[in-house]
Length: 213
Image (cartoon, rainbow, N blue to C red):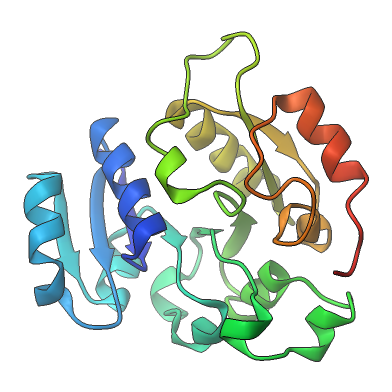
């Protein structure tokens, strides 16, 4: 049975956990405040879920989903995620995270900086441009007409493939942006952010995104 380590138990992390458990995954979920603060969520999720510290969740997961604020990048466990695929569902918000000149100038992407922090992991962008509440409500079976699509990006083909598989299980098609250097196209301030589109529409919207906002 595949286990997903979830680092960040806010709205997005909790919704990913709910859908994952529904699909038959085991989930180890964590936050910055301690496992005891997740008792109610774990009780709701049922026997396939347990709470842990971020390091424990990282170690337990066959792969991980990270949903913490960008400003907390340094708290993501490195050693425990070595050799694993890490899905970065976070976004950079200046008002919340403080200014990062390289991001403001379009010289870097937030997910590429996550990859720099996790040099022995394989980072992929995922779940970052959909409202958290729609993760469990907007998915539809494969081949459904006008099925919603979500974007991903990674420097590793196997990481993009895992996100594509997970998206399909969650009920979404995939548009692959290529390397992490292109992941900005699906980030806040661009026209694809939190907009429901099928794969063809999303591809067009991503292509016309401005580099800086």
